[in-house]
Length: 569
Ligand code: 9G3
Image (tube, rainbow, N blue to C red; front, side, top):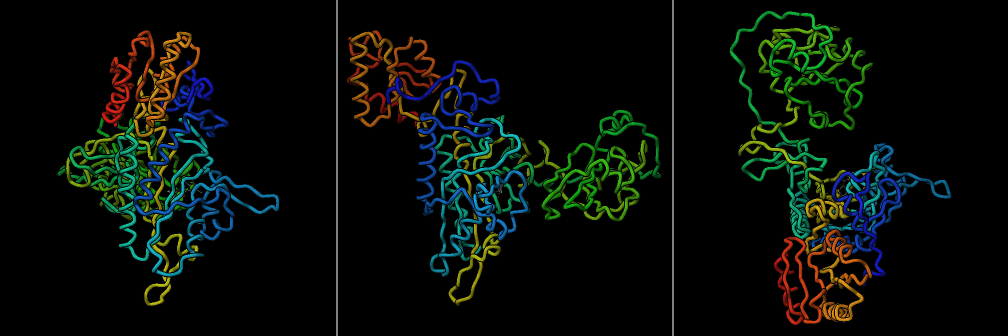
């Protein structure tokens, strides 16, 4: 491709509204342009890299026996009403009316569509198992799109759906998708971890997220310092055991704590450790009040509350809800003398506190010498705190450390959630009608591209892994007015293309400095510079990743390019 007519507008300056490297570099190297907030155009350079990622995904899906299809972005509301999800989603679901005033949505995902497709055309167990996938544009009206295509309102996803007759079948489909995902992310040159993301017991099998390690990741991974255990911090189970101190329980005592509302204020003024405090937080769990108790140095994990109650919505109680249910304003609430309307759940660490401190459900008052069994009752002691660094790893091996991650893939065992709702059944060998057992599997294709750049760049620009680079190499004629350089670069362009190389040929009449800066910014794996020694048939080959520079005679060029490319793979 000749750069002179190639739409790859590079920017010298860092766009002010781009906070992270991948967003800055995708704009500066001319891969994307913003069309609206959270809505992007992929320019030719970005499109070529995107196609490389898509083809890796396609190859691995096909190798796993999945069948590619394409479903519409426009989805009729009726399908979502049938699955019961139409009301479950708020403004994130982009809804619209057609000219006949019929209601539709732009698809954020395709469980409903795929399930009706299979329901209508697959009846017998003989046709199963079957895994179908698409690579298609999704729409989710994110409240705060950010970080370029890492969190955009329109994005490309590969979404796959498996249909089985038995749970064992689903386990097999899930495992083959899991392996395919491992291959995809490895081939894209990503440093990633598959993390447990399910609600159930430790090491549960219901769902895994594939996280690319990056300091700008919005997810936190709790991983073991010695084993390969890794889980999304939202669900990582806490297995710590707590020793009850053998100090004597003292009589309960109410005392004044004027304006001491936060744990820190209380701990400082009383000059006690936070692990002697009982932190009470009121939640509305599907509209029901739940008082959650954790030790003062721990944080309540609302996702664990949501899973415990199998709830749809868990929110912090508002100021007025707190007053309404606890007869006291936030900052002084506690577990003693609580209305029966309020469930009390506590983390096991609370049970081990002896002579602790908690709110007295009275303004400016707290209790001290609080002891759980004696002074308050709890509906359940459940693991409801966030795991912390240094906690024992749930698999019993080593301790927990944290890392930030970007979620690029997510695999789920759905079971019969959609097949029952939509009537996707099969007749088994005895002619008995049963709901199909489903799994679903997503890869954020545009997000993979951005994550790859997050993990593969330096201060001069992108450093493309060879597997997803938009071109194999950059060919630069330093001075297009010099006959030798012009001739040799044109000959090499033809020769390299004939040899099957994807070449971006910088034939522009720009100053050398501009060409070299652009080449570093665009970041193709190899750069061939035709300069002063063109007359001797000598060119310079530079490896973008290592800055290694070789002087090569043109009759050795193809071999050198071949060797370097293989070494970089
Ligand atoms: C919606 C909106 C946003 C959504 C969903 C539905 C996420 C929704 C979860 C999934 C599950 C899997 C198949 C591919 C892999 C992920 N955000 N999810 O269902 F209406 Cl607005 O998409 N789907």
